Image (cartoon, rainbow, N blue to C red; front, side):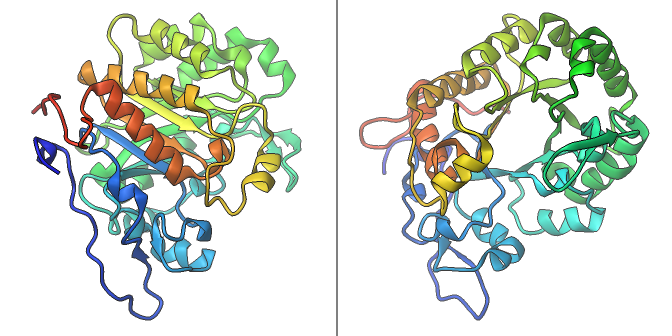
Length: 351
């Protein structure tokens, strides 16, 4: 490659033989031929431990437990993959030591998207089938959120902590019908969270599972609270165009940091998508229109001097790494940085 590609390009991982039990990055992955993007634009996947990503992310075939323990370091050596969504944190809080172990496996510029635990994000306590049984007395409790989530997360990840996403699980109908009161409760919750821990200023984001809550009232509250709206693409939420409109209501003429979690292909339930797409090694149901819109949003945020985090789930199109690759190509085109020879054009780096 020629031209200005050195501005954004990161070196590909070196090829070598793996030692016993070691997980290496794929040496001939199509992801290594992705167009370079500015460092402020971070793309990645939801989790990283999928055996079906052989040849895309990992060299050789490894069982899921091995990838869970040792795959992150290999994942983070793929230059395209600059972030990952830590999803396991939703199911149980982690210790600062556990977060630190993750941080030690990735480069300095890598940034995690971290889901807050259901302990404070779910209004009900659920059984193994996901059915709500009793009200959750810790729902939107800022003291527990700080103690069980923010403090250990930021202590462990340090500057590698990106957006801390509070994904509010599907709410009981009674709470949805009292939406104004819920918005007030969310405002009080975010107002009580620490704005700074040491020298770190956490980035808070709210993700919804009830589209009825996506209102101007909510956007005004987030703007006043200094909280980002996380675009969550899911069967329970409106299409990406409406969520883009909500972001415009939040930001006005000046886009803020963009946080997107592309969770699920539109029209599918989670389990149906999982069964259809497993083992997640190829694109099955491509969604070029969503990719185009997300690329436009990412380019607009970058041109406004903002940061971008977009993570894709395997259930979005069938294979998250290939979704990220296609999205990178769309973003490069939207930025005008991808020439026909793969070179980078005229988007300057900022201090």
